[in-house]
Image (tube, rainbow, N blue to C red; front, side, top):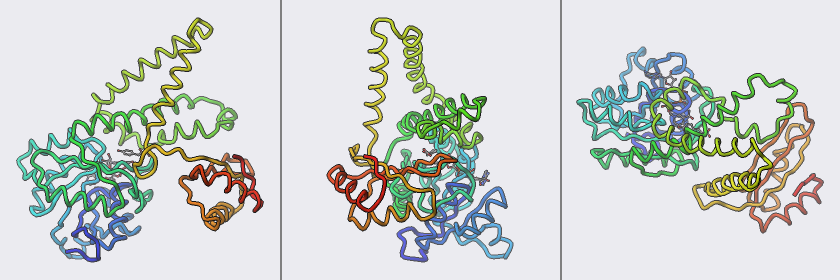
Length: 370
Ligand SMILES: NC(=O)C1=CN([C@@H]2O[C@H](COP(=O)(O)OP(=O)(O)OC[C@H]3O[C@@H](n4cnc5c(N)ncnc54)[C@H](O)[C@@H]3O)[C@@H](O)[C@H]2O)C=CC1
Ligand SMILES: O=C(O)C(=O)Cc1ccc(O)cc1
């Protein structure tokens, strides 16, 4: 039974009410879907209920209310317990579609298919959205808006189960892509797991760096180490469950790293500079291939930087004025170094709006750098 106008049939039972589970709960509740949350940690389950991600299963049980038969079970627990929770849920809720959202798929699908359960109601999925924080306090209902969500049906998944998973992803604002399990694991090794490794390896170089040196860091360092703040416990599980595809990608990185080290050991040798330039431009080629917003073609937006005072309301004022000027912002990034009295707002717009916006904002008294 659906409570609101949502296309999702509830109740939806979310098992694992951490960052992802509670974000899904918040997003579905915003569409008036009936959501029940369950977590091994009573505290996380209670926090999830408090922030509005769904009704606590424990609280329902304590009040002697029985859980209405869930139409969908979303398993949002850490990867290492996901397969066993999926299997248990398929047994316990014989009418429910059971989907998981773990970052790795092959090991889970294999375990579910090997168990004596009705695996046709199981569909593996993976929202490509997250944060470098964990737990329900970090949850956001809009986490999945315009983000990809991969659906990995296995050979015996029922079409209705796929449809249910797609409906949930779409309801949360995500864009659905279908991949088989092997392709998924190979792909995420490159676009998610190795980036995490590279970020952590670079950030680990900073452990003994004097604080004055870190204080000089610009946005480049912050951009590349942001995800190094991720939960080690989760990443031990992800990397070990997807070790083989990750290692394949790391072999390529090792090759390029060895090439660069060798070149830089003799930087004035004949051809050395060309080799450095080649490595850098190979990086340019790669970054230019990353699609723009909403999965569209790589977009060539033009950028400008606006200096704002570090006082409340400045950024809101700037955005309001850009809106008044009728310009659509394609992207926005804030740069701010602690201790600096000003912040930098980097704005991306369509190139044909660039010059006029620089002029208009300057006229209105903003300090704009092209
Ligand atoms: N963190 C991220 O950015 C993303 C994570 N994922 C996947 O989502 C899943 C959850 O990750 P997060 O929400 O980040 O982790 P989290 O640590 O924030 O949440 C996991 C929750 O599961 C609970 N839990 C642990 N064992 C349990 C069990 N046996 N039964 C019920 N609950 C249990 C924990 O108490 C915790 O509240 C993982 O499988 C992860 O691979 C997918 C996409 C992005
Ligand atoms: O924060 C980011 O940039 C991420 O890429 C988050 C993320 C982490 C793990 C996943 O399985 C999917 C997405």
